[in-house]
Picture 1: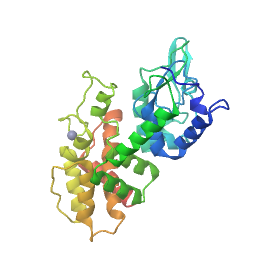
Picture 2: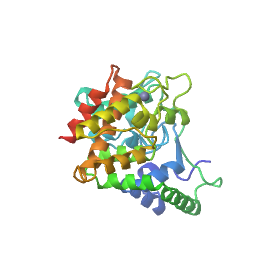
Picture 3: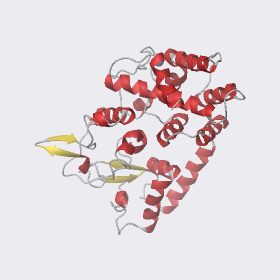
Length: 314
Ligand SMILES: [Zn+2]
């Protein structure tokens, strides 16, 4: 069922006060933004009503969450899908990034390559209006169903494991750039676009290569890429060695890994710096994985450690 008025994306004057308030909250409160994205799905038509970056139309998350570095470099543009490309004869061409890719910087360029690959076979649909679908009430949107679902979402967030909460807390307290902090929180909540997640969302199928780009041996997942992969294990061994410690791999989740890392360095490395080392390392693993996936070539554990150290010692 289509939801209410179609003015939601840009809050025109005919939007209800409730929608206007909600929309304003989305820009400042990521918790509400996350919840809202889970409640409304966009069906792309012409593309003139859907916010290219902020609405949830391509996967489970808005593009600004999936590609934060590029979004920041482009100065948080507010464009519709229709404005993010153009038709030439009967072919659609995306031009959401007006910067030459070589001027974007490494992280934004990696985002650009990933997003371009994701959009490769996607285009708006001419002659069909965009639609917004409220998922939780067959009778259409109501404040009651929105409130009930917001409370459910809040409760599910509260049901995060103790180590997940501690990890998120640790990330909040660590002084890192916003995009690193956002990336790390998404990692803890298992919201990165790893191949197993893309399969769940129907973006990748069994015809695609689902192997981890670092080791090429196992299916890529959050836990594999950052903890269990043989290349990741080498990276952690080198990072621990750099700090003067021996890394012993244990069968733990991502949050537990962060907690164990922080506690191993407690009393030996100053507070705040411990979290930074871990965050820089996982971020370097992710950027290297993206570089292999979207630019080709290879990245070994030494390259990843050099990248992590460049952030830590900056
Ligand atoms: Zn691997």
